[in-house]
Amino acid sequence: MSDESPAHLDGVAACVFDAYGTLFDFASAAARVAELPADRRAAVTALWRDKQLQYAWLRTLQGRYVDFRQVTADALAYALESLGLEDAGLAERLMALYLELDPFPEAPETLRALRARGFRTAILSNGTPAMLEGLVARAGLDGAFDAILSADAVGAFKTDPRVYQSALDALALPAQAIVFVSSNGWDAYGASDFGMRVVWCNRTRQRRERLPGAPDFEVATLADLPRLLPPSPGVTNSR
Image 1 (cartoon, rainbow, N blue to C red):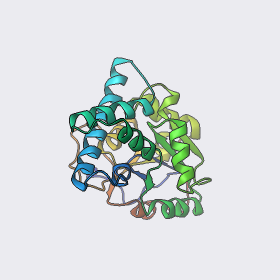
Image 2: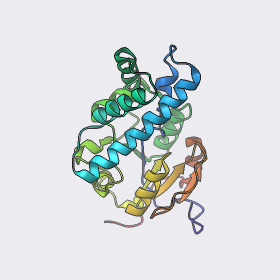
Image 3: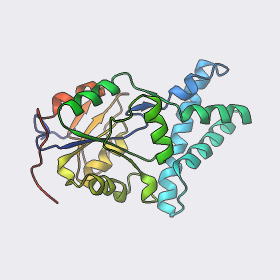
Image 4: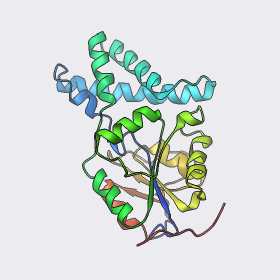
């Protein structure tokens, strides 16, 4: 968090959320596979996630885009092979569960509270539209978002500035009128460097990144977000 952060995020009109790790628990896929021992579930989740992010970043750098479902499947294949767990049935089961991730417990109520106060809400994620819409529907969050935005629309993954720009374009708001919320430090710093206001939902007490940008606030749970916002939305400047 910046040492010069204001007490509140005045002028914010919309809250834009990352999906994986922020609204939805990516660890819940492996956690629901009974045939995986608990210690193996943690190992699969960690390596799967690490390779998923690496492949997304590297493909963006290489200009070799494939959608996030393919990236996720490729990362899972790498993780299972590395851990000696190669099994077509297991891979199929884990991929199916990744499309049915559980929301974090406080996410639905946080979204309801924000919308009740008049804030616009959106998802901005690397996930494909079908992946994101499926998660939202399964969680009973239909109608909780003004927009569900995918990096697929620009053919690149976060932290490519074009992805963050797509949120400004979709909501027709300047960067300073949007608070971006992510549990991923690299994403929080990337959005801040782009120009958005940022709340880093640091669920796992990650260390601060040594990257351009700095989140305006750091919280441990989405339930802490509403108190950082003004009573009602507003816009202080225009693009």
